[in-house]
Image (cartoon, rainbow, N blue to C red; front, side, top):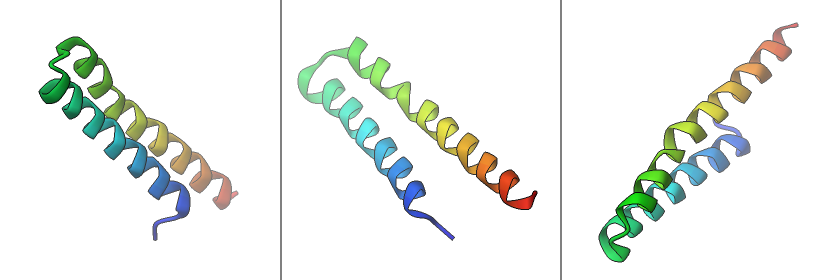
Length: 60
């Protein structure tokens, strides 16, 4: 069900989330934290787009 590329996308999301939490709570840099937190949905959308493109190419 999950391919290696799916795990890389999820790993990138987790790293982005924890980096954002680190910046918010430890470094106390709110602006950088919010900027980094915005990467999470962007990475998910990137992964979904390429997953759908691969599925559509396989059906042809």
